Image (cartoon, rainbow, N blue to C red; front, side, top):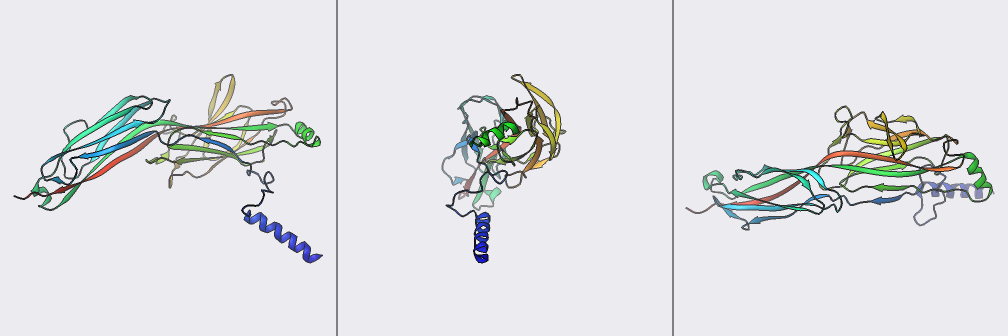
Length: 322
């Protein structure tokens, strides 16, 4: 009998540690934060560089002219993007055009395509010492956009929970996470079983990820830029217990609902295209706020950010015979 008890205990521990692929999730709902999330995530592609061409086809003779053309496209079907900037920053020994290598597209309409073409002059023979050479043509496109994510959470009173359990219909809740379009994504999750109980601790985890082809360096703090800091918008019925790297920044009313705002007080680095996971803990509304029943709340995170994408090609140059 003792050996049988050890066997059962050992099997339980193996299942707990390994999660055994293909086995039913017998621990779902028992461990905080293991509930699924219904996630809707829009595409990371927003502003793209496409159809990059060099005419004539390299190699280019020393001293000859050649053109580099490309398109900048707004792939969003709804949003107009303002102040899309482009600039040429590297052209090697080639001579760049006199003008047109820096500019701004003030109002970039949904699905609009902007064509650009620059004419360069290859270096002379003496500039490349009569040896084959190359000109790197590199340019940058910069724009500002807003990342937004929203997740819902159900709060249930203790009395309502007891009633449902006695009726043999224990409640369950799967939050829905909606993540907006753009390369920078904000992910939200909860560290407690759901639905959450009234007047209880509810940890919220926040992380930011760059899923685009460009470069997002860091999240500035609100002292550097109130607009371009990470904002967490929480219903007024929630009270903060602790919040890593965040400070309260007042309230805002939308649609008759008051929300508390929190913004990051420290710079948040983006390393290998991901931020560290941030944790906030709130006390959920009391039973009076939810009429001693249940109520669904929404938590929103947003971040206005600058984003750089680069385009480049290498043009081979060959010396000409004298």
